[in-house]
Image (cartoon, rainbow, N blue to C red):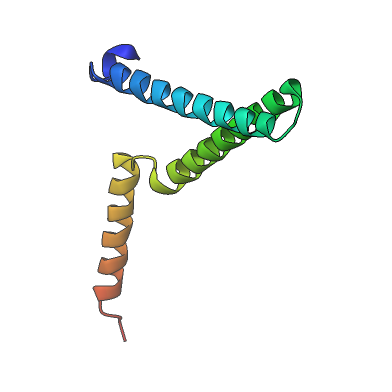
Amino acid sequence: MPGDRPPGDARVRQLFGAIGMATLGTIATDRTRSLGAGGRSPASALTGGYHLAYLVGAVAVASGIVIAVSMLRPPRSSTASDESKVVELETAEHVRQPRAA
């Protein structure tokens, strides 16, 4: 929900989105110019420029997914935590009880 986020969160997302688009646009433009200078047709050079930009974008997204999956963990439920403590206490008490001979 939008009300759950801090007010600056939307600005930060917008800023980084603009930086990412500018970076990909620059990559596409530079690659297009270098391919055009190498003798390729304008259509082929433009396709090659956007191909590289999309490839870089896909690698960035894949890297972000890998980082998010490896770094983020779901919060532990207090109920599950309480139940595991009860099981640990019951196990500890069972181990401490002397056995009848």
